[in-house]
Length: 373
Image 1 (cartoon, rainbow, N blue to C red):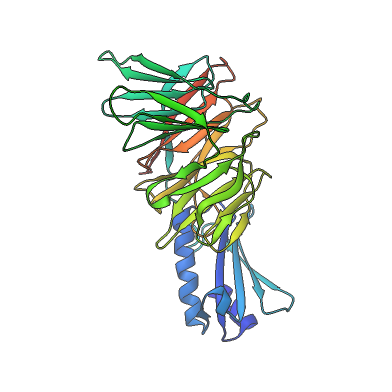
Image 2 (spheres, rainbow, N blue to C red; image 1 turned 90 degrees about the vertical axis):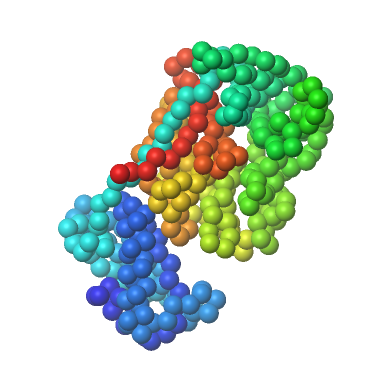
């Protein structure tokens, strides 16, 4: 292929590393096919693909486009030399590997609950159906009647010594050995594990859980602010600290987890246990959650839009074929600013809370990925 030949003429028959970034409208399956084709042609051209720390040259390929068609750009770096850039243009009706059209995924949005009082987080048990609402001053439990309506069963006050910070956040986590734990700034609550249900709240600086199971990770939350400090336990591989962040979610790889952090400085970072890289995004907000599905690569990241609070937030699904996110769904409108977005315990769905700009009420939704046909 002409493009591979141009790159090989720069590097010569060398050991090279290859990174592919998608900044075009190509969907993830197309990017994967292009990557496989490029790797095959690299080998055919006498190039040996190796890890970055073993490479004599690094090749970064960006898949871009303009109104005429696709534009593939390669930046070749050899040692301390000035990078060399080469590119090739491809028509949209060109080779099938460059532009196969596939149906995108969709985000299914299921409305769960609505109320005037502030909601920090929600928890859902499907069998028997129960709904838990975390508010600033109490935790409320509901059960579903045969009519389909929710009926309040119990409520538990949240005791706290210090006043809450202005932009209060909370986390509700279902547990296997007891019903749930709740986390608020400087406070941790736990439901009883036996006998009559009760909830005990105490001052605490314990870290909040970001994920469970194979993705067990905890982070310390600032007691006077609305974000995580960046200190992790047990850490992601060798990395025990990251920049302060609002939310985080894991993407499963074959032998590790790639964690995505929505940092408090507005950037999105990916952390794999060795490297912490800022990735290019456009218009992302501060809430992310991951879900596993039968679509695409099997894991998608849900990310909110970056609104000013005067227009509704949206949520869109992304995949990470490498380190750069690729949009794989249309945006779903949640009616107002999203105040919470967390992956559910099963991993296949997420729970979102927004405040409607039309009614002022807090709304809770369950989000899942629906595969295109």
